Length: 96
Image 1 (spheres, rainbow, N blue to C red):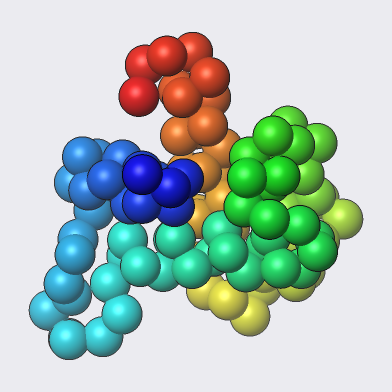
Image 2 (image 1 turned 135 degrees about the vertical axis):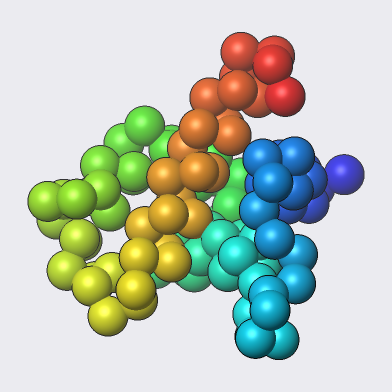
């Protein structure tokens, strides 16, 4: 199973929605798409993003160098990368 599918299942396990009430994009899809978007911005694969999450995440964190990139995004990308970082940490520790 690829990394984004595992991340999807992790978000599902956390209780995030699969379908929104307004029939718009759901939280899980938004967060998974956000990770793909950031990997694209960085010019790397999702796997490379995972390997380098400790150095890449701070750029997108509040006050980071690329924080302003996320302002028009309604925090979708910020929350997606924040949860992805936690997911990778759990994967690396063998918890998930």
